[in-house]
Figure 1 (cartoon, rainbow, N blue to C red):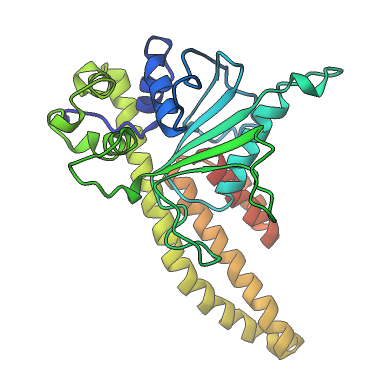
Figure 2: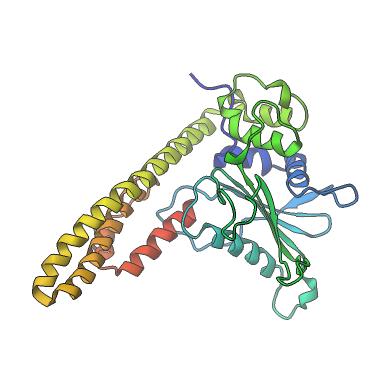
Amino acid sequence: MRPTFADPKTDIIFKRIFGSESHKHLLIGLLNTLLELEEGDLIVDLSYLGAEQRIPLPEMKLSIVDVKCVDQRDVRYVVEMQLFNVQGFEERVIYNASKAFTLQLRTSEDYDRLRGVVGVTICDFELWPGPSEKGGPAVPMLSRWHMQEQHTGALGLPQVQYAFLELPKYSSGNRPESLVDKWALFFREAENLDVIPPELDEEPFREAFEIVRMAQLSEEDYEAYEQSKMAEQDARGALGLAKKEGRAEGRAEGREEGRAEGRVEGREEGRVEGQALGKKQELRRNLRDLCKALDVHWDEARWKEVETYSLDQLRELWKTLLRDRC
């Protein structure tokens, strides 16, 4: 039996809500809330931008969840839903926003034609858990970032800014206190509800619930949604298992192969090389688990090629798979 509402964090549903011209007022409302814009600075209209050219992996079948748009002041927005905290995630957010900034300019055009870019990312995990690294206060559920002069704290260079909504940090229970709380509650709990709760029974949330109502999905869309949810669960399981087993097996195999190599080439050299071999074997196993979870299909020729990769090449391949999926 189908649940009443679909999960708005999945790719097909997220884009159905926020990537549709007929529902763009929902994206406007979300952005005005997460960017804490006030009267006079509010986004009143926007236009969607086409997907930028990426260098695709032919094996990847799952899309990156993002929506790109520009408002009436020509400010660009890159809006993303991020399900997993993967290696290189923060760098990818910066890369995407920077690319949206630089791609505005064509050859021979002046730099003053460039307009600001805001990267908005909704995270289904804690990106900054606990106090800051320097002992400062913990980062709140909604955080906004841009350049700061380090001696005086003066803010400047606002051309590229970032906002993050970390859903696990929601703490208001069934009593959301602000629009930010209400959006967080919607993203977190929609798929678990049978009816629209009183706290969200108002616009724009009432309309968002109607869009994610399962009865609104065609059989084709429902099948795509189910596959997306299964792929998400498989990826979560594969990543968790790979981390758990990889650490234990890598240590054991690294020690064993280190002893074997040490007998031939010297104990110290063998230990170092054995650890490297163990790490490579660990990464190759984890790659197989990850490919299975992400529905990536490589033939035996490709896997034989992977067997020849150095440790750095394996790490880069791992990061590429995660970046293009997540």
